[in-house]
Image (cartoon, rainbow, N blue to C red):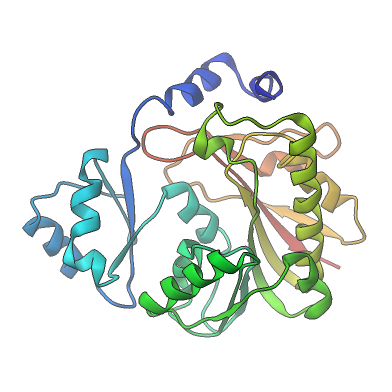
Length: 292
């Protein structure tokens, strides 16, 4: 699989990917505005003698060695902020949810992106958070409760949601289960057959999500892996399906990425492959609008 992944990047990009696994990554945190404001949180950081870079109104970046300090802070244990990779935050950001909308986080555990979505929605509307794994479901449920998230939790197979609630949601986030190469690194042993089997599940999940999405609704599909089978080919499969879809632009904020590649659909170039570095993980992000 490594040679197939390497072929998707320039030599410089691939070296950067390899280098991103050599050192511990810096720590990004997400302000939970439902329990805290930025002035209060920044004062807590000052009292802990921490230095940070403010990325935007929600996200702060700290040195890797500060993780233990952050996770032991009173404000962390009071759920005023969530430790989250910046790339994960970008997935939720790009769904562009609004107050009062019907929103689904389809593969939600452990709940970080659901926390993002609830903050963006100001805890209004209807947020459904789904997780198929029983153990992970209870982690999700506990996290959302702790962070003060107004959401309904479900333990369903995501592949069935399209049939259970067709045309229900304004926005859907599908951060699909994947081979996790971008998070774990290339020491992870996955053969081509395993990757193809994962991709089959991803295609079914996306098809189900598109059935559950209202006409005119928008969906973000993301993975934390590099393979084309789990990324571009999943989007290609959706574009070849019965749905009429439009690919939308991605807001990368400060992240560096390259255009996705497809020999069949030029518009897939709007999907992005985030190039990992010490500040964030590699990710694939695609945004679709359902036209019919």
